[in-house]
Image (cartoon, rainbow, N blue to C red):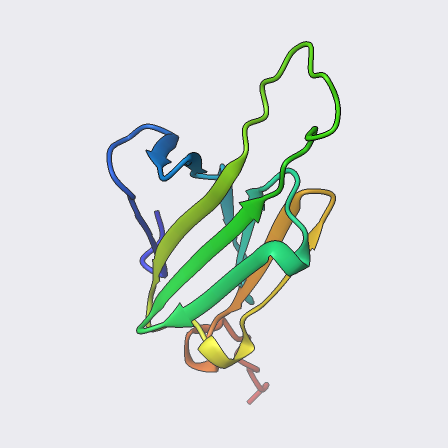
Length: 130
């Protein structure tokens, strides 16, 4: 993994951790590096912008979201989606410009943009003819 982002494991390697009366899930995440920065994409089905809490403090990016009850008034014949929370934490390197971090969620996919500082972005050097 890049020096810009380090994943913080929450508990053991299981993707579900039981707390309180519900579960805490680690969403699956892809992190893509471009010349401009990093793009983090996390699968978070059932999550909306108003149930999502994302924070950046002391070089740590935390993502926490609550998944509401999906079928509270219906008889469910088969259920694989559980209720609970999503939680992930990442240590963010010094090469990321914290003031430019932004995010959006659409169709259950959270996309976080982590721009690189100008000092580490690749730049083209103009060469003049002599």
